[in-house]
Length: 324
Image (cartoon, rainbow, N blue to C red; front, side):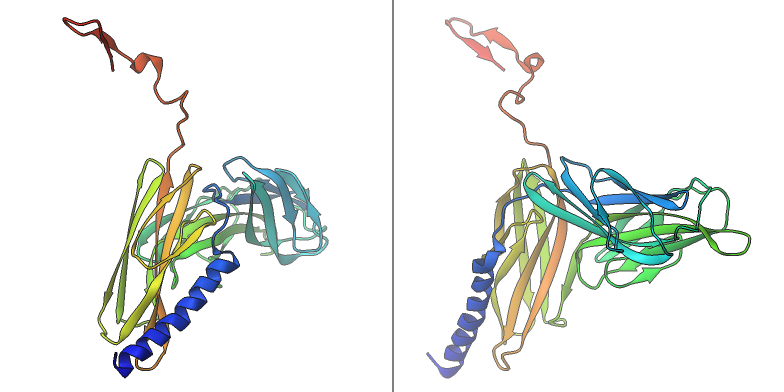
């Protein structure tokens, strides 16, 4: 073994030990359902009604309004004393797992009454890698309306429809809100919504030296995934693959192919990250890729085949019956 090989081996062992330490500190977790938390809000007089829109088996909802007050329930009403911008958080449990989602909420105070019926929602569409199209689906009373987007990555926008690029693929809490203006151009009514969105794509801090391509498919509730890694610099060392399945569980492996079983139906974002080190300088970098899969509902034994789907016929010249 030459000096270069010994150096490469030492670097690999040192950084791999750090990755395995992450696993020992709790990388592997309880598997959770594939929920995408969401809630909406709108004025009711001078107060604001917050409503949980999350689809799934939900319990123990807790609301934190950003002004020190909190409440519980699927739909709650809160009165802010002063006009401000606060971060509102909804926390809840589903199948023994904690979830939370946060929104940037601009609101009036006790003296800012609203007499209009407005609502705000939005849709998000993946256009290409790391890029989503956001479109507000708002309902108002014809008043001049302001729009506000907070994309969860410290970026904002004030247009009704927008295309946004994310430097890093992953899950983000996106806020969309509207506000009407009265004849004096003062804020009258507010409404908005927030939802967890998945941004698929890839990124790398290794410049163009590493290409990472992720493919994933669902067979029943079994995830079949593979990470194709191509190096354009012979001096780079691949340390391993770090997989995240979107259900609170992860794996650190030495191979690019993985299988993972989802015990709950739902939408999951699968991400893989490879850690890379330069054997000459010991500088490290990474490449990351994410894609979204949908696990179907599990079918129990009693539900496997409906009676109408069974057919029976005798076997000629024998005491048998074929059942199809």
